[in-house]
Length: 221
Length: 221
DNA sequence: GAGCGTTGTGACCGACCGGTCATATGACCG
DNA sequence: CGGTCATATGACCGGTCGGTCACAACGCTC
Image (cartoon, rainbow over all chains, first blue to last red):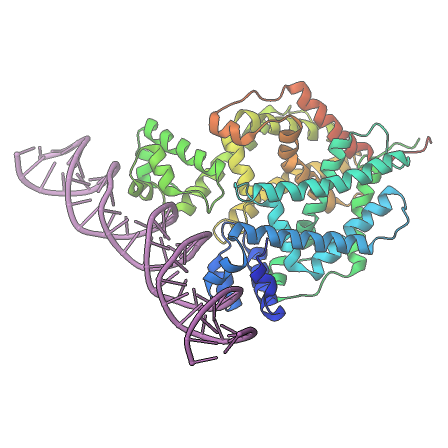
């Protein structure tokens, strides 16, 4: 957690530092990210970093927490309050999640890296927490979907949660390929034109379609 | 590619080295893996590594190629020649892939790491090739499935291939959690009892079930 | 044995890492 | 002005890395 010193910092400097740190962790995984580079990019001495945070790990935890709060907040704030059916709600959740990824590529890149972080001792706890929170959220949706009669009652819930989670997370890769959108470039050179929402929705329709109907050709009943 | 020197090595020494290198790359990602540690574990001087391979990258490429050939060969050799339906064939493919993962944890761990390798310049090409080969294989299955009438003709093939690929790859994580089987431990301390094939099949049934029928409760036709 | 090509060796190189700490700076107070 | 305290600094530390190279050891033929 940030020290009092960091919180007392003039806002401009604090943000300059945060931006530099996000830039670094959005492009590099934990081990490859360099505190020295962050300090250089922020225009401060390396020693100062250790006046603001306990160390690399502490800084990382702070950034991931911040990014997760922003993304979950963004999604929650974009969802309508009234509960539509499972598939509508799930599609909207993924849709707004993707919108967040396009408009906040740094934060999204950090979260993506954190999710796939090779399990070193310094990052395992953070990754596990992130994964647990996402799966808990999805499990809530699935449970409600079964109760509401939107989903088959004999569904293997564990597997369904796993599948929805994996596909949601890796959808980023799919979109990147399908729309030729490089998130790495977006982080490095800011922006790039995000995918039109219509095209995004079309992909999500294919996604939900497979979830809902399956892939099999059903012989006419 | 290995040098002539490496190929002239007595088999025992060559295998001792290969084993040590696999051990290292199965547990660490590319950047974290250490040539010095490999040399130490193999009981040779570090300089010798550079008599056998052009460098770290070359060694890595060799190992990934070797592991991929073994795994694809194992699966191909285990599949029946006659083409059953799409879902049966897909389930068998994943089944034998999982069997390979349990019985060859080092090779499988290396492939898994290579798949999720953070995209540094040294590993990007290898990861992309691995992913392309897997997706090409799956696309073949899907195309055949549509032609045979096993799959809906209006299926979004791109998305289907992506989903099947992602779920197959990450199935390892799911099994690890579901069966409390640590692949990392299996690599480090050899073996551990693999999941009984019945339990494995039960998971794959749930997998294929979702693929085939979808998740929606269908009102009685 | 001498000569020679192949293979083995590990000290060494420059680079970078996370983290520390003695010291400098500067703002506030009496 | 002196004193005090929060903050800023960057040279420095021990460590590890991938890679090199001068040299030693070996195996072969003559």
